[in-house]
Length: 504
Image (cartoon, rainbow, N blue to C red; front, side, top):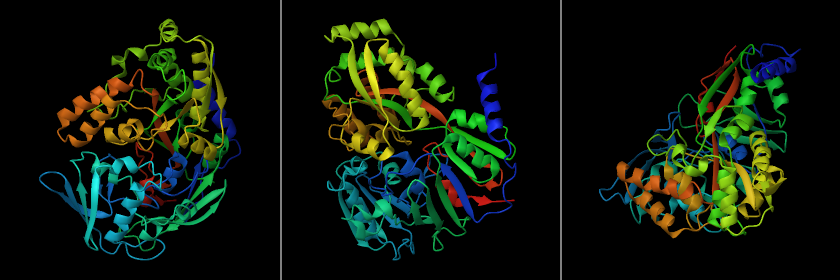
C-alpha cells in the first residue's frame, strides 16, 4: 500500500510538472499567496486571521511588540516605567514617527487609539484588554501615562496587539476597514476584492534600513493546488501559515524552503450556551467525551499538531496537560450516559457554523461523524468569511468551528473570551467563580500565584465550559530559497517581512 506521505509528495510533483524550477533573479516586491480575502482591515475591529496577517506588524504597530521568540520589546514606545504600586505606566514615544497619511504621531494619537478600542460604539474585540485602564494622560507630545484601577500583569503584552492610528479616526468606523493608515514599514496602496491587496515600502519608516522590500502583494488564491504551483514556478515567493498537508506536498521541491513552529492559536468548537440543550453543562461535557482529538490531528492536520486544552502547550509555565482532563479521553458510552442524565432525548439536531478554511472544514467533517455516534446530528454551514464573522459576532449559531488566536499571556486567551460580557464572549457564557479567577489572574503579578489561578481556570473550562478545545497545530511557511530574513512567528504575525529581502 502506498503511504500517505508518498501519495502527497507524488501529487505535489504531478502538480508541478512543467513549472520552472527557478524564480526570477530579482523582484522589487514580495509576492505572497494567501487563501482568503480579509473581511476588513481596521485593526481595532477585525477578528479574522485573513485580516490580521496582512496588517499586523506590516501596516500597523503598537506601543510594545513581540519579537520572534515572543519576548515583549519596545514598539512605538522606546521604553516605559512602572510605579511601585504597579498602577501607573509611563511610556516614552519614539520621536519623529509619521503616519502613512502624513502627520507626526504624538501622545494624542496614542490616547485616541486606546480610547477608540475602549469605546462601546467601536465594538472592538480588544476592549477587554484595557478594562484596567482608568485614565489616559498626555503630559507632552512624547509621553503617555496610563492610570490603572489595579495592577495588570498582561498590560504590556496586550498593548502589542493594539495598533496606533491617527486621532482623526476616533469616531470613524468605516475608513480604516478599506484603507488602513498606520506607522508600519509598509503602507496600503490598493485592494482588488478577491484578487490582491498591495502594500508599498514606507519611505519614512522610523527604523533605519527597513523595510528592505519595495512592496508586498498579497494575492488571494483560495485553491491550495494553485498556490503550490505558483510557488514552485516562481510566480509567488512565499506561502505563509499553511498547514501540514500543504507543507508536506512542497517538502523537497527544488528551490523551496520550509519553516515551521507550534502555533499559539487553537482550533475549537464554540457553543451558544443560551440555546438548549447546550445550556446544560452535562451536554457540553458529553460533547467533549464524543471527540477523538487524536483523530482530528491525523485527519485534519495530517499529524502536524497535537490535541489541545485551554492553553497552548507552548506556554510551558501555565498549560495543564490534556492528560489531566478526564473528558479528553474519548468515551461514547460516557457521553450517552451524560446526555441521559441531562434528560436529553436523542437524536439532537444542531447547526455547525464553519470557518471557511481547509483545516476547519476538514475538522467539521470529522466532528460531524463523531457527534453522530452519540446521537447528535450536526448540519454544516460553510459561508464566506464575511458572513461567518457577522454570524459569529452576533451569536447566530448553535455551534461553530474556528480558530482562536493566542499570545504569550494566559489572560489574552481567557479574559475577553470567557469573562461575563467579555468582548469576544459570543457564547453568552457566565460563571461568577470563573470571573473572579480571571480578575485575580490580571491583578496578581507573582508568577507562582498566577500559575495556581490559571490552573483552576483551565480545570473550570476544559470539560463543561462553552468551548470544546480541539487542537494546536504545527504551522508552516513555504518560501522560495531567494527569500532571505523571514522568521516564522507562533502567533501567525508576518511582522518579520520588514526584514525580508529577495536574493538571486
